[in-house]
Amino acid sequence: MPPSLKEIPWREFLCRPAFQSLPPEALNAEFNVPTLVTGAGGSIGSALSLRLARFSLPALLLLESAESNLYKLQRTLTDDSESASRGVPTTLILGNAGDRATMEHLFALHHPRIVFHAAAYKHVPLLESQPLAAIANNIFATETVATAAATCGARVVLLSTDKAVKPVSVLGVTKRVAEQVVLASGGMVLRLGNVLTSSASVTEVFADQIERGEPLTITDPAARRYFLTLDEAVNLLLLTSAHPNASALLAPALLATSEIVELARFMARQLAPGRRIPIHFTGLRPGDKLTELFWSAADLTIPTGNGDLVSIHTNQLAPSSLERGLAALHSAAENHDLAAALSQLQALVPDFQPSPSVLALTRDTGSRTCV
Image (cartoon, rainbow, N blue to C red):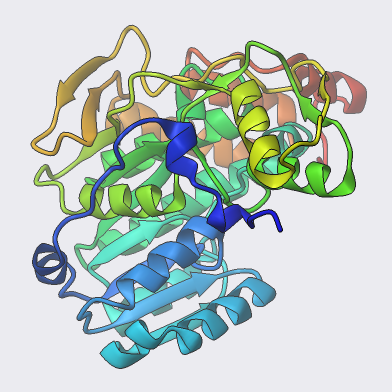
């Protein structure tokens, strides 16, 4: 019987040492304050929540907007003997990180001191057709979290993406603006690549296609990505939260990307040994790149005290310019004026190149759209 996704020996594909976690004593010393996770029911959010529940936290706050995800997380925590033995006071909250009243009440009541902001929309092609929703959830919700966190001196750790570098997608540009919001508020940002086995990831797509006996579909034979395991993503988030700088933009110390074609072939060997599975190339989708980067050629990278992370020094807008740009973006989004919103995104992120499909939305529906 072929292995499940979680049973696949991913280290054989990655061909590199695993990123390490801080030792237990250091983690328990670091996480001795009330801690909040937004997007706690997502793939990375739930894995992070489970890890935090195994520390000696005074309080763990888990915010999730999807009821089914929150229920699944509740069951996972209940069934995990290690976290149950810790008895960490855990509060599950069904709500949206972008709801100002919810966030203000949460911070006033529980006073979290560390905030892992994992809540976001993340699917590139879908967001190309839903830019205003992406702006609301990825930018404005991040702004709401950062503002609420500032009221009690909490440190925000933003989960970002390599797609924020020289963005060509709505996902990438909204996460780049979110990075600037968090850095301007004194928080931390961690850019991650593709996380193996995460929900709706390419590994799930390939596994489903293999099970159905279908060809594996890839955008382009030259497409490459950075890949990490779910455990590594959690370890890097914990390392980021413990970083000594008051504010920093970090990324994994990965110098090489992997071919998506090789991932497809590896998964085919693992899940259907001895079976020949064809690969079909479909062409790049709106917002796709051939290769992602953790930083651009114009950025300065500096090794950190931990060899698993690199610190990135990149151009940031002046606080006054960021504030004005966000206010203008708010106005455009509230008026469902997509053309004005795209213009403001380009002002906030000058190297953003919108895809033709996003630009077509403004032509097809006029300057105002309900997309």
